[in-house]
Image 1 (cartoon, rainbow, N blue to C red):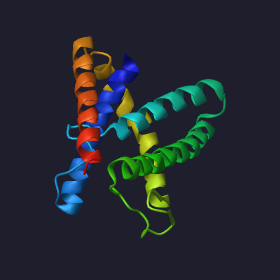
Image 2: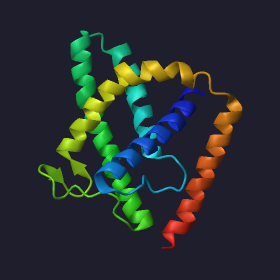
Image 3: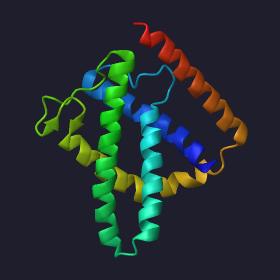
Image 4: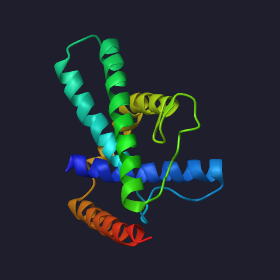
Length: 168
């Protein structure tokens, strides 16, 4: 239940973050490909961060600084791969390019940028040590009925989005 609630909460927070960023940078109120107030790639990313950090910190038995350095390198690579796969998925399924880093320095194609990759790595460390401890107590208090409601809404939204936007 913890991972499901974590996925839901951070999908919603990712939507809010992207909407605020888009409103400020592009003067457009938009986030993600789906219709609801969630951007699931953020939920997936946070789950990867939590699972990887639990695994590494439990099994490495290194100094804290070395664990953080290894975590940073590995999670940066994994989240970059997730962003790349997400971009390809959206382009293939919905026939749109939702982001394009090809004009940035040190980009690899449309979906990978060194600066964005470093942001994902640093953001993961900030998340792990500042945000996650604060929100974990809230996540554990989310009732099952609310979790089920959000899962049903997200799945319905995904199916609706898939149906509508793949026809465009």
